[in-house]
Length: 109
Image (cartoon, rainbow, N blue to C red; front, side):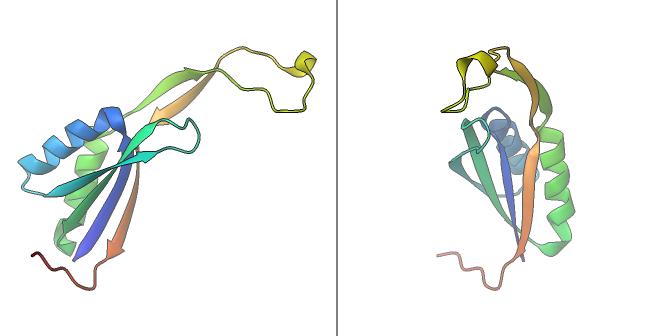
């Protein structure tokens, strides 16, 4: 048995959960916060047989897309205001970060 942990953007989480349920996977969604943008993320936990891990990863790839987003850079404390350029920067967000862990024991009560 494996535990697949997928960290996805909130806007992709609903589609991912729906796609997992259609393929008879059960998942748990946890709210989380991203480090770079400090925006909402979802951490999806899926317990799955070893033989079906690739199927789960494929569903994550299909459900979670990358996209461009503009952010406004924040000046560092202590820097001169003359060196701060308040123009937005375009970055790539989205996609997913996936971890696959071994599960020693699984008990459903």
